[in-house]
Amino acid sequence: MKQITIKERDQIQPLLQQLDNKLWVYYFPVILSSELIYMDNIDNSTILLSKEEGNWNMVVQPLGDSSNGTLEKIFNYLRELNGNNEGALFNCTASFVENLDPDLYSIKVECGDYIYRKDEQVSLTGKKFSEIRNHINFFKKHYNYTVGPYSADDYNECFELFNGWKAKKEANIPVKDEHIAQLFQNLCMFPDMFGISIRVDGKIAGFSLGGLLAENEAICIIRKTDRQYNGLSEFIDSEFYKCVPENVNLVNDGDDLNSESLRNYKMKWHPAQVRKYYTVQQLN
Image (cartoon, rainbow, N blue to C red):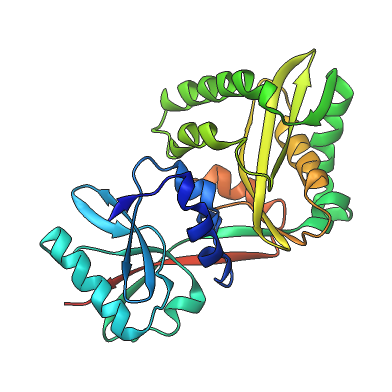
């Protein structure tokens, strides 16, 4: 077992690319952003592990061979590491769990990633997007803004904006996406990343960054805005879709963190689908 670093990208990324219906977390820089992720090999399968609350779990389903024999060995390995039967496989796809025997494994839906059609989000035509268009028009009318591609020169201001957002959120509830701070350290390392920054009166007011999950599918990795500007959230989302590579058809915007307000926001953009992901444990 060894901790993964950027050096393992060429080994892990091709294995992630082989998976169908990829999840948001299957983008290597997102995995790398977690502080302590380890890798090991069982038979012909690469496994990625982390330790939370005293137990080792897999952060994604097995990469490579996931036959019943290999899966049994993986759970035996988790049992040896933990000294109990609590080890789990997180972030498993529907195509993976549909081949599992429900008499042998506990399969639980955790949440779902919101998947959007790029062409719909760029055009925003029709009555169903009228509310979003109204927010965008308000922002464009009332603020002196500029939109540009994200660059390393924006990093310090974006990080300051993120920390201000985090401090305000933590005053009310715990922040669930603290991995974002670690992710910032890797944002400019990968050539398949893209994004925008928005300034109001010359000052960074928001940024949104993405990357390629597959040849025709992207993810929005992170977006943060200064909430004092009404309509900025809708405006930055609409502008982000315009910078997505031309060959991309779908964009995975991640889950809703079980937040009702975030769920409502994502739903008003009318996702093409909600791609469920699952947690798997071996039954005793």
